[in-house]
Length: 102
Image 1 (cartoon, rainbow, N blue to C red):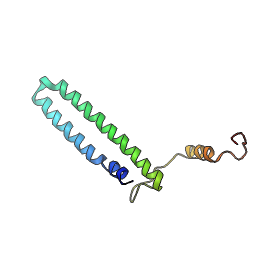
Image 2 (spheres, one colour; image 1 turned 120 degrees about the vertical axis):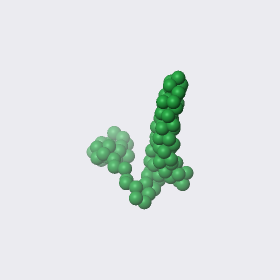
Image 3 (cartoon, helix red, strand yellow; image 1 turned 45 degrees about the vertical axis):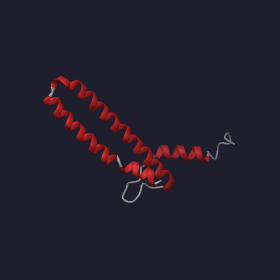
Image 4 (cartoon, one colour; image 1 turned 90 degrees about the horizontal axis):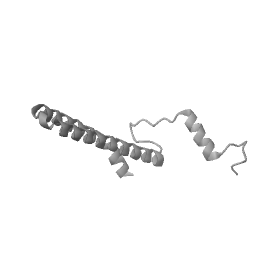
């Protein structure tokens, strides 16, 4: 569980690194326009890595929430829309008027 919390907390560091790379690549593109195309590819790669890290962190947050019932101190609890909560509870418990799932 601590690994999931560590990964989920790492998104701030990933965001900081992404912003730093983006700034550095803008400087490179301004100073060396000939390699701007390569810098754009590197920028897109950094963006995609940041998105992957965000998705992994989201999965880890849901693992923590599923196991512990909360995301930890000070973290808001993810809200499940009412219609999804009702569908899930019906699927898990079954409709008491419907005997077809027996």
